[in-house]
Image (cartoon, rainbow, N blue to C red; front, side, top):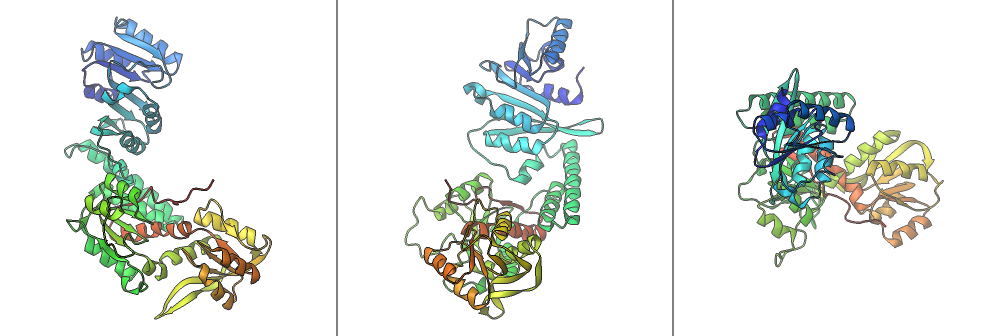
Length: 483
């Protein structure tokens, strides 16, 4: 009577008490649970009267109306869960299932065994379940015609774990689940097609990311020596090129000296350490050094304390990343070329000697109003707002750019004939001087002019080490709020 999807849901029901079947449709699962003696009572709910009428006919046909309670409900809103041991939600999208569970406020829900069969977006459901502290304890792949689906069991666990994007895609199948292996191969092929489409569209960073996800779906993750990761970064962004006052490098080691999960962040604060720990990461790579000034003591609230306690290593690439080809300023240059018509080759902004430079100077193909240029910068950096000097209609063409805090370079921009400077963290006196010099100054924020380099770091790491799970921290966000 049941198709393979519902039969798997039936098999996974614990049977310790009342079962709730959400979105019951024809109540076929409810009827089979009662007839097989798997449970003594079922609550069958649906959001519409039509499916409940069909369900009513089924329970009457099998003479089980006294054991099946039919409830009109949007999700679990009208369902009493006090005596419910199992909740089955099958045949809906993963996002809808996640919303139903997220909207459930019953205090007894911590004792429920959730049997879930998403038709789409299984990865979204897996990630949300863990956010709800519902750990997936069992997962099976099922084949229905030419389609592959998954059925998962989730139960409350107070020990919080967050899933990376890859974790959520990979699932929790047993090693001997042949359909689970087939499911992962199918997902790998889907991700590879996405990667190819993105490559054809010129979106190289995203293409590399999806190609690496496809690789891991087929092969799983594998450990890499942190020293190998460091050496590779050193080959791209030489740590020896950092400023004398800087402190870039491998600043915190872990016990194993290996990593299979890496979190990227602009800064390493306590929130990022917590996120990395919840994602079982072995290494954080950041732009700003987690240790900058000499430490005379390590207090409990220090991120360094958290790294050591959680056995997470830290590599920090600061000024060496700012000045390297393809580094922080190199990413800004690339984004400017994608957004605006740039003529000829870029020029170095501040020349540091030895062929090294900080920032770039570019020329637009034609002058544009400062306000129009600022609008383009907001798109590039994802800023909530931009501070700018002078008149909105002032025309700009020759533009200097420097990530982070480059307000002190205003005089250099004037000397090099620039009519605009793009940077962050501009102080009051610099604004005054910019207006005196009639130079258009754009403050796009320290965070926003640097955080976009994380996507490039992920690209180079996934290109070299597709076997490691590289995740941009969800908590790598602007530390300021704007009200």
